[in-house]
Length: 388
Image (cartoon, rainbow, N blue to C red; front, top):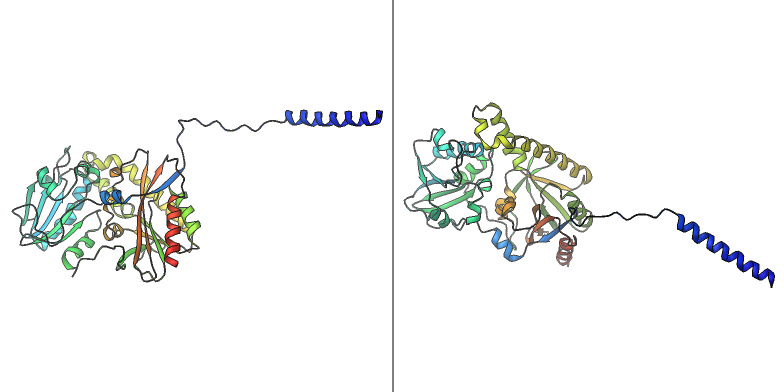
């Protein structure tokens, strides 16, 4: 009995000792997170149908319509902001070459308060070039929305080709260095390329292969998910999508590189030797341009190294924007959001015949607490339906 009692006492002592020792171990402290600290995760949030419609409301004119500004009958009509930026001066140097083919009418929108002389005050305009200063009411007739017209930094010129007052062709012009593309479209093209739409096949989409920098016509012969992705702080989200989807379907990633390959280098070159460079707004963004170029090239190379077999293209002439009616996606300031940073990405699903089955415009938002699998679930469901 006494021995049994001693055993019990010994066991209780050992248990007490173990508890005591465990209590002496350093406790792992949970990190204290401030409620006001910025959140680093992101979420892909699909646009609603109403948002897609709103984002695409730019120009209401169409080929075959009468041009809504009276008094203009024939030739090219170029709508410009009338600002004194170097960028506007450079693209007008390119576009005014159209005067060699037909008369040109410049519509000056007057959207900016000039700090210096606008291009039409410092350039020698062609003899067959007329200058017309627009009223806000006339701009609204062309279909522009008030919020778009108020953002001068995101304004892009519009070009129409008229015959007897009827619109033959129309074109958004996005970046310097693309004059040849504009010229061939407005002058030599036999027909206007039809925008890619759901239920329609993809034709003649010309992109640049990232690793070779060679132009290629994208041909789709198997079920394909085409992604137009904005390089930036959302790369980890792209990697998550690729890791999940690459075994389910052919994935093609298109990176919008026009500014890095055309606009920025040309602006930097011009700034280097212009006497009036300090009066141009681009002067203050020079370092920003250099950073953008370096960051873009570095992140593109990282994507190629991580996915060596992935089809990666670069859109160096805004062909994706033009062919898929994505003009608003290059204007992130027009996207309504309360978050600090918003990027727009687009997804297009094609079958083996190159016919577009579905499309999504999505916003990638920093600081959003929602689950980041929403878009991935939608894509997986759509791919599963396509394979049935």
